[in-house]
Image (cartoon, rainbow, N blue to C red; front, top):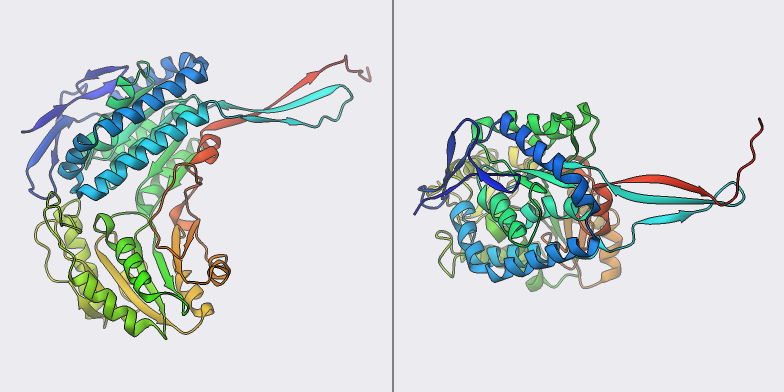
Length: 486
């Protein structure tokens, strides 16, 4: 049954000013799952009006009351795990395990936001003048523009709004056109039911063809004081440029070309299990997914045989089937893009070890390549699908050089039984995150999350998220009357 949703502005569900709607398709069946309002620039103005009007009271609200709202929302989310999983399956083709992981981590992010509301913010500074007291205090910015993606819709939908709200800001969120309910409206429903005041969080959905116009209107509004965006590097460059043009701080969490490095002292069976998980969770549609497996030459033959055999056994298809590991990609176009990357690499000399072929709608089988040449598009491009390459290396220097041979810098995994060896290699990798004796996919609410270079800048998570969405002010108190020269 098709569901219908409107915009959320000022605490009310309202149609787009134009009256237009847009379809939200199930990626596995191709059928219309939901119809949502197709908002435009005029709806952005209405949403910012509401957020701007709600800001003074929200910023002044007791931290204890703000904490209660976040804790209640976390409890509500966990109580609606099955509902959330169903939404994710219909909108993003998510398997049940991936949906459950989203619920757990998103609830954790809400609880971390709750903790942040009453955490200390600021410092006492030494003062130059006798009797002087200096303070560095952090205060909310105002209205924050948030862009939430489809691939981990609950995690990234909650992350887009939790820290800004916890810091005392109000938010207007533009959710992805591919999962507007899961990463926008459903998150707002939970917070609204938990007691979030009207206008503090507003959601404007839109038709795909209107995305650029709606995004630009949101970023350009002078009452919007900061921006956060999670998504592709290509779109992130545009968002960052727009924000810079309007002199607004922005947090960008973008794509990755992530490597798992299997050192010569690794346990091969553990490395295989870790790599399969890091590559194929959510059909590889995670910014942290491993695109490249770099294996020491003494282990590469054994690793490749075991890894390929395990990958070949992974079930692909219906996300509702309990044994499906590789669900559909977000759309048939996304699956065709992955197939094109594979064909280009094979045409240029890469070896297809398993998988490949034409996709079935949005479903593409788990695929492994080796010997991908530097002139193949896949050598540089983020796969963002159930696809990985394997390459051998002779020594640590070569492994580090291969891992760093990308414009991206998000995450990496270093598999080893020697933590000292792993740490030595990890320190040489140009990524924002490294996991030693583990693969690339991990997230914790209290940890600083983000990358370098084309993977973006700024950090979500813990105190770093609060700092990203608050302003540092210098205040002084003269405890005795200062003397002046005239």
